[in-house]
Length: 195
Ligand SMILES: [Zn+2]
Image (tube, rainbow, N blue to C red; front, side, top):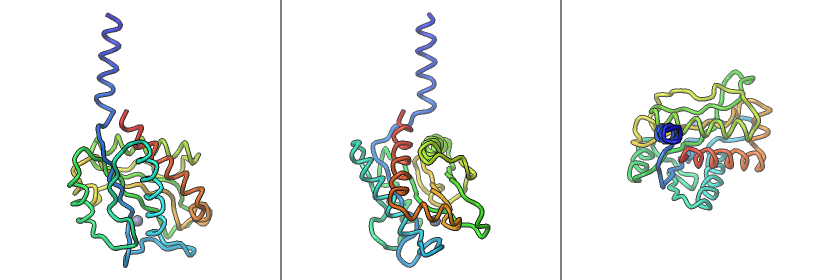
């Protein structure tokens, strides 16, 4: 009886928490004429693409299929990013950005979601980032009515992996080793969301 109850409880827990997917759509923010945030000589679009390509390598190594909304420095409309993502069945959508604020003391991590399954994905990715980067700074998991989250029909998140406007954080993001750490954390978070 106890075994049955425990098994039921575990299955129930997994049914609520784990996501089922074969494909990860990676969406490096901005590109081409849209540079995104630009601070201290760094341009967001380049950093997003760099991290996304690192995540792609890590996920493929683990046997997941990856679709990139861009893999070069080109401009892609938000609607086209969502349309491309919606062509994949059994997928999750992870958009990659870096943050900026006129208040240059603000730093840390933010992960936006809209749906409850997006929240599951986002919480896994945020936990993984916080552990790997050893920080609890930032607003963390935030519900955000963003176009790519509205328009994608799958668990979807927008990851803001640090503030380029904060001098300390920008200096870290400039290093390849830090961007690799971000990528490893995001890949591990995505894999953890599969349960
Ligand atoms: Zn951005």
